[in-house]
Length: 114
Length: 111
Image 1: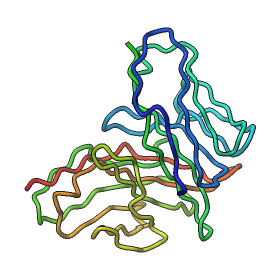
Image 2 (image 1 turned 90 degrees about the vertical axis):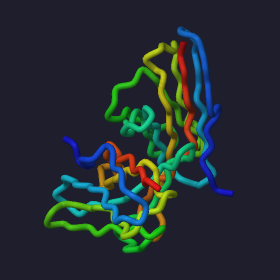
Image 3 (image 1 turned 45 degrees about the vertical axis):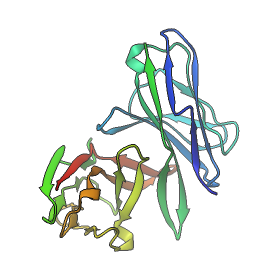
Image 4 (image 1 turned 180 degrees about the vertical axis):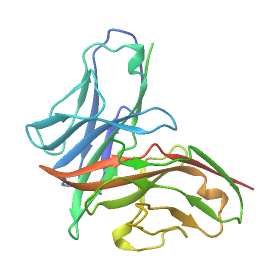
């Protein structure tokens, strides 16, 4: 079934640790995105990719990095986690249907940095 | 520049009452407008988009280009409508469509 997967769903980690949030999609989409969202708050775009080997920073400055080696995979990495990184991270992909583009979201990863 | 504005952060209505979630946008071209919904403990999902002119779960939204608005309406609110609602705008960019989300409105339907 076409979907967007994020792992882990929940992560509690200590300060200074390196972490990678995984995102995979079987939607066949070229475009993928990472958003940061605090509970009940707005979405902030932190990274996006329009295809393999293409990555761009979003509107919100982030210390995270991303890579896009495969179309279906768009992992996000924090080299040294800090409490300020505590948030929910949403992965999305977008595709065109009937000439119209729509974004679809994964279930999110809730990150708590102690 | 803020492209999508949702003036109400919180909105409470009684069950059976009409509900309207406001959304205004700023874009000079012809954008596409969407409403996304996030129910408790569920992922963000598309509710409807203006191009489809459809009614989903009793909700409708009309694009008013003169007022640059895309308000979401439902004549009779239900408890299961309680959720976070995000208005979003999409327009063509250099390398594809750009998406912008509003700050969201938390809707609570009171039994």
